[in-house]
Length: 253
Image (tube, rainbow, N blue to C red; front, top):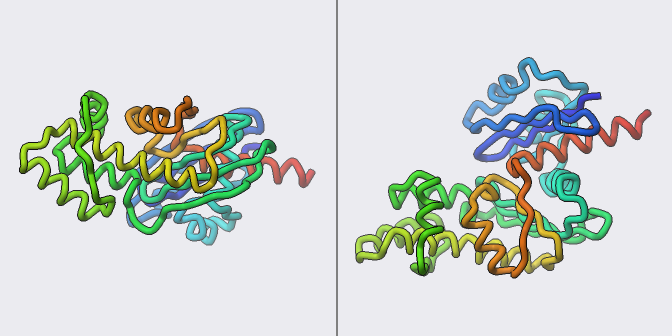
């Protein structure tokens, strides 16, 4: 039995196939206006017995492919708990939203919070800020990591923060210090969301922004403990979908 999961986010689409014991394949592609065409291309030549979708485009996908759709909260909980058994707190920072999830000792959801009102504190926010500083993303991360102190960023509205960054540079602020200030703002917002669900031991950090080592380091410093980041944190939601399909298939036998 090969189970597939697809996470259709605002920025990227993630696909995972799972055979009941291990991940067989995974793909990550940028999303665009032709979401279903991208999904079809990603699925071309990929063997699977059933598929479940999650993410912003889950219902669109389920209508076209006649499959089940589950919430991102459920998908990320299943994927994170499988990847880091015993985890009690999940932080997911994606392209345009942030989720904090608290779990009980059995991996069941105790409470969750989402910030999905705007791009503030998300991957898109970081992309826009890096562009405002004329950095690639890797340069942006390196710049923040090398700063000795941070230039405070007061606005978390993406539009106003971009103007604030440009104004700071115009007044002579160092780019490294502005970069660190932006990263600090992301972390402050994320940790605040985590505190609303109650931060517990064994934290796992997933989503595209989990690849940002500066954000990871700053979160660890803020909460005072190491956090776990899977090898490929972007595919956590898609993996959760594949796990859910696999479990349903086993239970139906």
